Image (cartoon, rainbow, N blue to C red):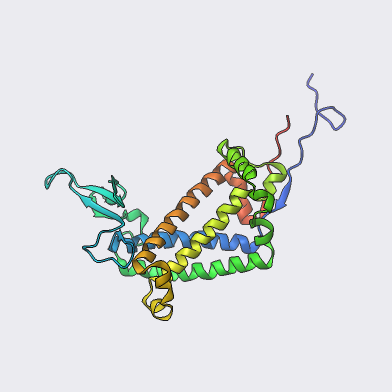
Length: 288
């Protein structure tokens, strides 16, 4: 005869889920607007890079100057050899056929272009349209960022959730957090209700990268050069600003990749739902 568990039985009832309100409305809205803006800025920026796929350092930038970073196509086996794509960073050159320099278009035909069409807006070579997309979403990005930072300061989110505490900056604490992440031991229980030190440092660091992108973007504007020439001195010229702009964007892309990987590991449904509704189901601690 099968026994049915009742409140009087010794069978323990499952613990109720703990749900906390994790993200305010302004945080959620500015997060998704930032995600949209950064994606479109990246794709339109790569369209702009296609016009001259080389980056320089200092007051250089003419066609015959040596680039610091370059994306190009070449036939290493001679005139009749296969066309291949290459990327050069400083003295190091490596093949990037299929991604940078040479890629296949939608029809499968070989296309000589620095950035593949699927990664740019528009997909065809169109500098003017790419610049219009880039400038429009750049200003939306700046306005949205100002709202996000201002709200974080006013509602205490920056001080309460993002600034590391003194004890968290101790080497032992940081190394312990790194070790836990390396073993994929993600926070649970009360620890999952707040950001760990790696998250705090990462979010503050990417904030500085975004600020760097904004400032270097302004430095590349002739109008800003005329009204604020000190920015040219700060970044060592427009070509250096262009290179820093690209490197900061690349570092931000790396952050986004790691961020998405951590979302998948932590539970994408719970994490994404918390950024839509604000409510987060706290992962229970493992009881031995």
